[in-house]
View (spheres, rainbow, N blue to C red):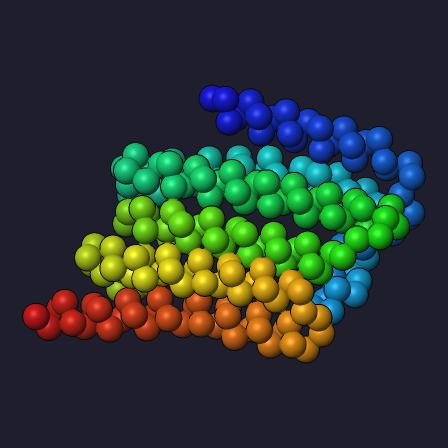
Length: 211
């Protein structure tokens, strides 16, 4: 309940800041940056309100998902891990809003560095709680084999936890590089984070079902 109150207060502050700064914004504000940290997308300035509301929208959506998951009983077992990720994602979106607002106000900031650091920290947090996830359809590493076998799910998430933490560390390191070097580091890290748990779950499933 305390966390919910804090999130509501945070959201109110973000929205009020958007209202306050709205008259100061140019007609079009940056909404997207490329890998080099250069703005490559703009939108009307009223989008600042959408950005300011993203944290509560994410928080609310992640509050609904457990209620519609056919394996909803799993959330009573990994509720602490799920709530940690729920809060982390909401705070991350709050950070995205702040970075966007600063850029729209032409305040000097290294957007690409801040976003990469934010994503890296987010993956480190998720990696630290991922092994607590129990079999469900919404939260965790969902492959045909983890969903088919509980032991495969458990082993894959134990490995995936390490992979996510390593990915997070790599993302944080990549924040201090620019251009092609940074893009290559991020691409390799993300591909590894996707492929390793996927392949591992398949191999474990084959091993278990053959034994």
